Amino acid sequence: MSRELRLIRSINDLRRNYRQLGSGDVIIGVLALRPGEEIKVLDLAERGVAFFPPVLAQLLGRSKVAQAEVLGEYMVPGSFVAYTLADLAGKLPEFQAREAVVAKRDRAHLGLGVSLWPSLETLYSLAGLQGLTYPLVVQPFLDGARDLRVVVMADYVEAYERVNPHSFRKNLFQGGSSQPAALSPDQQNFCREVMARGRFPYAILDLLLDPRDGRPYLSEISFKGGLTGARLSQPEFHRRVAALEKDFIQQWETSSKIRR
Image 1: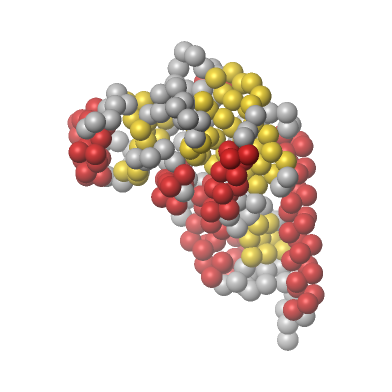
Image 2 (image 1 turned 90 degrees about the vertical axis):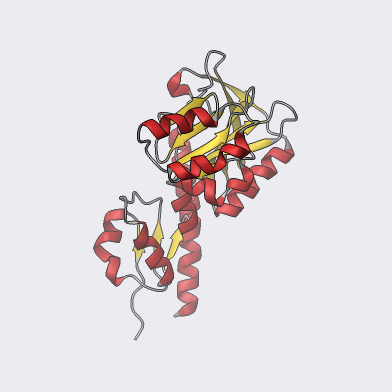
């Protein structure tokens, strides 16, 4: 006898129904998982539960480290993840001819976990003297790069540039300002390619544009972020997200009826 399929709309509903969920059920929305709960969504996906956004995208959106591991090919060349002091040491020969590097602490927001170092040797020397919080994403510093925030939701795309002539920190929370920016077709395609690789149905992407040739590199991708510099308001952003979720639910309901 077939059972009634479940539609889960919140992390609390997931926790209450976790052991009963199975093939054909669906979970809608970005989940506010606690550290360690990631195994639940992996388990549910293995049991045939559908997710919107997909599990891969949800896990990537939570972690700079995960993004560097999975989406590293789209980031500034030379980006790597340091899990231990030995990882920093192992990269020293490669970085001898390089200059400044940026270190990003995992799951830190608003630029609070980002630091600039004159060289990898400097970061490594400090790490050898006192403990750092691992893992860290380490990237070559792209001096003079333009910093763009891009919002992509179905056929809606807009971008704005974050500017700060006094600091490498260009986010608005730490003193930057914003101005509208135009994306080239190649840059839009780049954003779509990153999203497809990470299975993001919509996203807020932070890009660095190489000052030498304008080539885009991924800095970060997420489902949530400040939109202070965007034409799109937060209420409209949430309305568009709700519309995407509604479309997914309708597809799920249609496929559920067919299976019955």
